[in-house]
Image (cartoon, rainbow, N blue to C red; front, side, top):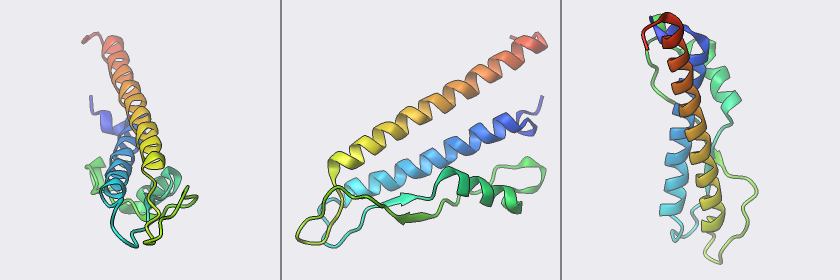
Length: 124
């Protein structure tokens, strides 16, 4: 059974790719917390990512696409230092924790759906 032809699995896979890209951007923010004039970044929302990937950028045959998530200046920074850096470690830590929890949820949903399909097909 080809799981990539079932839209739920495509959506879950896209969500996990988006969350991985967001985690990378959050890690870059934390790594640059002491860099003068560094501005915190975030990725565009998941809906924008889906619109872009559904507008024909997905490879033919359902092949895995290269993840291109646009980064934007993070809005709502909690604080800014005198050197112009607006990365707040507490804020980035909260965002990274929320991101990790969403990733765990997506992987658990993917795994459960896969187990359900295997049980339904008698393959367990």
